[in-house]
Structures are given as structure tokens and as C-alpha cells.
Length: 160
Image (tube, one colour):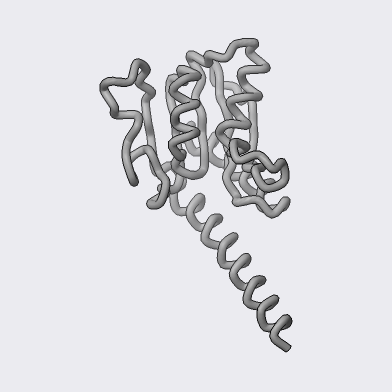
């Protein structure tokens, strides 16, 4: 139940991304059972390929705690993290990562590869997947369906 509460807050952040035309992914960082940072995808608007929800949330949490290491922190994200984000999470020394929908194209928590299982890496973060997976996945499906419909409408209009 606790994980679902925080994932719903991450979903709220994902809706913020959609409003701005960004892929709807949201994240929250929790420390001592309190949300200390929230973020959503912003690479398009910021012209920054690293502005994924997870990275933005980690930056905010590190700033709030005054430390680039985030031991004892948990990150909740609506989509399975990519390699860039997983690497940042490990460097931040998060205690736990919880994600919603899987990402069969770039997911690094088991869909394509599981970076969190690599024994040779020096930090191991607890990983939980599938929390509110249907809701998180449906949000992405709806976003891309809307985007495709808009592109088709534009193509029809331009073809006239």
C-alpha cells in the first residue's frame, strides 16, 4: 500500500510532463517516509537529453539534502529506468528503486538487462517493479496514441 501511495504521486508528476508535451514519466524521492523531491520528464523543453524524471528528482533531492549521495532514499518512477538513470541511481547510493511499467526497449531493471543485479558493481540497490504497472503503462499508451492521432490529422491536413 505504501509503495502505491508514492507511485500515485509519481503518476501525478507524469501528468505534468504530458501537459508540457513531454513523454509522461514522473518520479519522487522519499527519505524517512517523506517525499523530499518530485520531478517529471523535461528533455524536450529543456533541450537536455539527461532531463529524465529520475535525474531531475535525484538532482533536487541531492540539493535538498546537501549531499550527492542519497543513502536511505527511495526513488519511485512510473517507467522502468534506462541505463543513464540506473547508473545515476547507483552512484547516488539509493537504498531502493520502485518502478511501475516495464520498458521493453530500454529498461535496465530486467526488461533488456538488469544493471541492478550486476555483482561486480560496488553498490546494490533493492529493486521493486510492477507497482501500479497497468496505470503507469496505460498513461504512456494513451499519450502515444494521442500523439499518433495528431500526426495523422496533420498529415491529412497537409495533404489537402
